[in-house]
Length: 537
Image 1 (tube, one colour):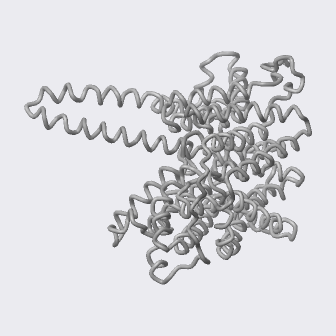
Image 2: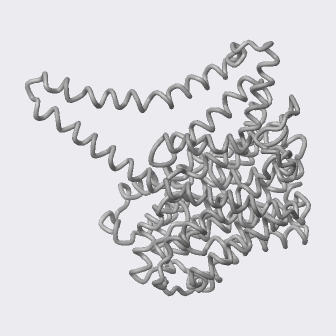
């Protein structure tokens, strides 16, 4: 009942005329930017982050909720009409969605994606409202050692699963942690990595870092590979679904939601795994398996629902623990910190009205997304025909304007260009972007919890594992770090053991299969890297 009454108060705040208007503007802005080719939700949110600076926090986050879901919807539109996913979690949607569009069923593909997003987003947001307070009660009982261990787990887990190699992931994390060190040490008062520049004493503004790495780095990367060939956009009318389409879509929507929310709430869960699992599940359960690979509507409905349910799931650890589990959530965390608000266990007590207004606005934004964007689908399709040079010139202009508006200092523009060049080089050499952003945001917080833990234990390192939860988390961290090495050793020794058996030839077959699986897995890893903004996707 407490959750229900708090949520009703949140709706009362979010449905005031001014806040409702901000929600509508957020949905329209998020969709308009998110639908542009090559822009995912993370880049959309990062690019529009400075737009909310003139608003008070509650209105700003209500607008952000609309931008968040609008960007998600825009990503599915480009996947279906252009076969150009804006992020890695939209790759699976593109498999069947673009085939449907080429077969003249673009309207049905867009409709099942939009309605599936609405169903999954609504259920996922309801689960967020129920589970976030429970996670908060658990988090309040944690001491500094456990909280430090959980944040280290979040960093390492995300870093270990992204990109084509773990080494590149940890290199990106190291860059982020180094950027997070810039400024004055909160304990000793000494300057770190400021190079004698007084304007760096307060550290790098996370908004400038996010806009530079996501927007400027991506724009430079795409411009460097710009093709003059015009995009072939498939024409689309107003999205609609026939009776048979509804019959084939409603079960995939629910199953996709069940896959997406739990994975979104886990550190390093992300949306890639549940969208892939949803696709495989629908292919096995479908009465029309022969249509998969040629435009099966279930292959759009399930993965798109899983994608949006995972997006709602990421808000649970973000609000309750202050831990972002994907790039979009990392930019949302940057938005909180820019307002001086620290997500975590104390957020619901210190900023209760704002949090519940944000959760309520997620419901409102999800509903607005459906009723506004379905009629506007032909208009969004026309946006896809913008010439690429104009598009990315516009992105660079708004990124520069937004970065300058943060502190109204020309020095921030220099930082924007330097960090934008860093973002470009990271994409050039295949370094994933997300670990860097997480390192910048979580690095100072991890340092603070580490110092607090060591102060409580009088400098004894044993204080780091003085709580049972901390010990359990360190065991999980050890498994994450050691398991790939053990797997390689087991695979390397398998042919030797099989040669001792009489059926040596048959013994080698599983090894070959294993090798094939490993190769295929690395290809999926590359797709993740590309979608995350650091590869060729």
